[in-house]
Image (cartoon, rainbow, N blue to C red; front, top):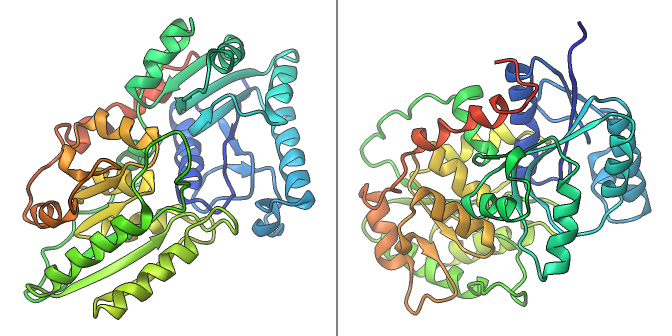
Length: 378
């Protein structure tokens, strides 16, 4: 009996930490729980036990570019993935939306050739209107399996009439303790600087969702770190978790490093590169506290027991915070009237204000994302 051929598609290879992490853990989980031969639609990912639809020698910057070469690369990669699989899986992220692309008609065409469609660790919506919601509901009727990562998306799936195929799951990063466990950190030596990780995000401030102003919360954080430095040694790692040339965070992160150094704070830039998400997982897990606008900076910190605050710039951030019972004081929102870091950051470093749902309780849900699929073998 031949092994099930599964192809995972998402925003892999676009120089974004969270998306590449999805590809790695999906390949690991498919091998383990589906006994399948996984492939990743996109460039090769470090540590992913999977083939890829883009040659290793092909420059990743070409694949992720916004021009004709990038679009053609992604089209050819997706076409190859569809024609070489039994199950096409949308693996992780905010991918079930009304946004139009070449992928949807190609996926629907593949079902007529017997390819099954699935999605794991995804969010549904949000939608601007009922017409957009109805279009997505019609699309999901063609799926064989759907596992969503938050309670809001599960309610949305039920309302769309696809509850029978829908599993209430969690974010795919919760598979990390199962497939990439990390040993406990040793106790710090006396006098060792406290290490704070900061992950800004180049998000828009003019959308429908009320977001905190980037400049304002960064200034508030710098002021808090300056006061903290007066009581103990502090080192700040500023992560750019998205390195895309147009949508990424590098300029924002490097600017923040410069502003911190101007205030006399020891700060270093940490860029995401080489399609190697597990290396960045290690760097985040080595922090004593994390402030993240990028969702997966916060999720990785949470899973490794690192106290964290999240910048609520998108519904997916709010959904995750709600699901784990994160204290309101640890959410940086547009409604904050005072400095949200002033009392919260020292409290985190003192071991206070832990999420209501313990990380391992959340992670216990992760294997079921794959084990509940109709083709699961274990």
